[in-house]
Image 1 (cartoon, one colour):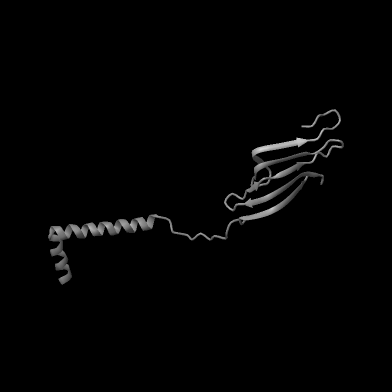
Image 2: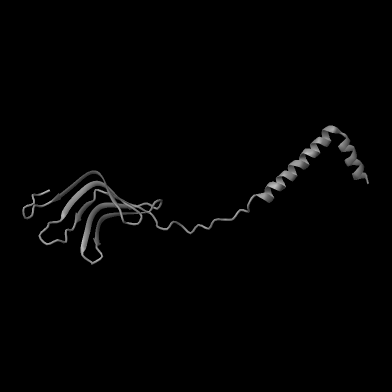
Length: 141
């Protein structure tokens, strides 16, 4: 009974009563925000799909669907970054195999190179030099 009388007297006091109503409104508003927002779910990180690494003195060979040599590369420094899973090449030297009798291979080098995540695209960057020896009536390129 005394509590009810105290609360009634507090509500009659305008400063204290408005403060109590404001506090009650804020508490209800906060409860509504907690109720409306989605529950926090922890994210289970298992790590990147591939780790970043650096290789030095690398030799790569690629073969076509019939098992014939298609492409070879010598790279002094190769780096795979975990962010985009692409390969970054420093000073790659490469050979494009002809697989046609009597036709020489293409040889080349560039300052930098990039290989996409799926290993289906190679971009040579910086000065790129390619050459092929002469054959038949075709001059050297």
